[in-house]
Structure formats: C-alpha cells, structure tokens
Length: 429
Ligand code: SAH
Ligand code: SF4
Ligand code: F3S
Image (tube, helix red, strand yellow):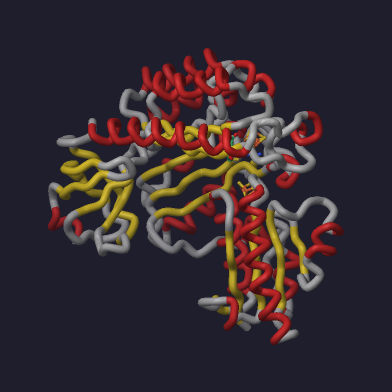
C-alpha cells in the first residue's frame, strides 16, 4: 500500500505529519509521490485562519474526485480543523473515511488495513520520524493554556503537556545518529516547557541536557511567549554554546488597548523591556515577530502604534496576517469583526513595506562580517544554503556538503537572505 500526505500549518503540524509518516512506514506502507497513485491520502489541516481551512477544503475537493473514480481509495482528515465533535465536518465532507484530532494517529493508521503491528506501547515516544536532512523539529511541549481571544489553537490542541527530558533526549540521540546536527525544540509557547513535570525543569534545563549529545551542533527553539521567557531561561540561551541566539517572539500588536483586548498578558512596555533584556545579553540575537492587523476595534491610532513599535524594535523579520474570526474563540463570540476587509488589506501592506525596509537594512548590516552557518541543503538554483546563529538565511556561492558547519563571509544582502563565500571551501566538500 502507498500513502500520500498533504500538510498545512505550523512547524508542529509538519512534525506531526512526519510522525504519522513514520507510523505508516512501520506498518510497511510506502510514500506515494501524488494522491492519484496512493491507496490512502491524509490531509493534515490548520485552522489558524480561514485561508488555511479553504486550502484544505480545496485539496479535499480534488481527493473526492479520485475517490469517485476509485471507491477503495481512503481519505483521512487530521489536525486542527478537527474539533472534539466532528459532526459538522462529517456532514460537509461525507466522503472522508476518518477524522482525527491533532496527534490522534490511531484512526488514520487504521486505514492502512495492514496486520496490526505492536508499535511498542505508546505511539508518540516510540516512533521517531526519519530525518530528511541535517535539521529536525522536535516537539517538546504540546498544546497551549493561554487562550488569546483570537486564537483557535488551545481549543484544538488542548492543554500544555510537556514530554519528559529523557524521552526527548532519546529522540534527539536517535536523530543525531542519523545525521541530524540541529534540532528545533517546538511548543506553541515553548518556555512553558516543564511546569507540569516532576521537579519542574525549565526549557534551560532541557537545553543543558540536550547539549550533552556530542553529535548535536545546534539547538533552536520556538515559539516564545514573552511572559514565560524568564531571566533563567534567557541566561541558559546566552550561556549554552549550542543554543542559537534566535528568537521567534510574537508581539501581535503595538497598542496597549489591543493587547489587553487580545488578553496577551503583557503591555507594550513589558514587551519592549523583554526585547531589551534579550539584546543586552545577546547583542547579535535575531528576533522575529508576528503581527495581526485589523483585530476587532483596532483604530487607525492603534495601528499607528504597531507601526511605531516596528520602527522602534527593528525586528529581523515580521510575519503579518489580517485578523480572521475563528468560530469558538472568545473574540468570535464577543466581538464584531468590524475592521473592513480593505482596511485590513491596506494595513497589511503598510506593515509589509516597513518590514521589508527594516529587514533589508538589518541584513545589510551583516555585509563584510563572518557568520557560521549549518549547511542545510541546496536551493532551486543549485546553491547550498543554511542559517546563521541568529537565524538569517545565507546562500553559498560554491558547493558544500549538507550538515557541514561553515564560516562564511557575507558579500550580498537582500531583504530575505544573504549570500557569501565559505572561508575554508575545501573543508566543506
Ligand atoms: N503560539 C504563538 C503563535 C500561534 S499561531 C503565539 O503565541 O504567538 C501563529 C500566528 O498566527 C500568531 O502569532 C498570530 O499572529 C496568527 N494568528 C493566530 N490566530 C489568528 C487569527 N484568528 N487571525 C489572524 N492571525 C492569527
Ligand atoms: Fe494561540 Fe495565544 Fe496560545 Fe499562541 S499563546 S497558541 S496565540 S492562544
Ligand atoms: Fe495551525 Fe494548528 Fe499550527 S491551527 S498554526 S496547525 S497549531
């Protein structure tokens, strides 16, 4: 049998898909290059914005045609579109054979109809995704307890649950034995790691334990939640040589009124102080952020504060999205989606214009410097690429082996990436 897997959404969803693929492969299935040549197709969905749901729906429309021509073809929908009750989805997509919530792998694997193998107790800690390069995602804390008013994630991924350090270390050792040199520790609010475990280790303790793996060169982590990012965790990031100075620290808005309405748990001043703390400890840290424009009640003056904050903090990258009401969330239940679509689109473009200028300027400041990158692979133009310790993307002018660490002199800078030459090219091939 062959399986086809289609994924949208965040890194956590990508990690879940890899885990599912590992499960299928343990059952003896092979990966199909497209849905038409598969026996079972899985759509791993995201609900963070309407657009992500629309993409999954259109994928399902295509799969439905395949099933009409070939009734034995099986279709599963997994991930964040599937809530505690699947009735509405079942009515909308009656041709789907199985619905599974995020990380609920069993009903999907059951479609394989292969003789059930004993997967060795619990599926999650015993089935590791095969790496496809020198970097890998490792979920360390599932779920989210924060309930920001606009966000569907806590309703679909449940409460925060941390994996024990020894279990994560076993997965990382398994990965590094197969060529992985950099792991990205994943959580919706990754600094929440450990509060629910015996002895309450924190993210810094986890990073310290993983640093002992000699084959591992680098550790990344995301996503950061300002309020959970303690001085103790920051000291660990700054002090551990393998941990990259690279922060994904969503601010969402620059206006205190909007932040309070979103229930983010901090005001602008607290966020600015957190960034200052990071930069005081790690002057070369890379910091990216997320912004929502057109949140209910966002005035032009509120929005101007967001733009002013971007100018003040000068992030390395800004991911911006227009507010999308999510049924079931607090904002959807209690607030009107009152910013017109054209105003949202215009604010989105204004953020993008500021972000592109600042990203370009920040990248340009790297010209002439030497940065260490981990070569991750080769881009469409045949150039090797990797990331600096601050998370900046660098393309190399000459061939290099994936998995090599290279010191690179930066010679070109654009808004999205840098380009340069390795100082010791011979060591790379
Ligand atoms: N846990 C992270 C991000 C989770 S979702 C955090 O706390 O920020 C990823 C991003 O999607 C968010 O940072 C937010 O900017 C965006 N997002 C979430 N819900 C959204 C919504 N309803 N409409 C538009 N963007 C949204
Ligand atoms: Fe969503 Fe807020 Fe949790 Fe991030 S912290 S996943 S935005 S509820
Ligand atoms: Fe989307 Fe779920 Fe991730 S809603 S962003 S796939 S946690």
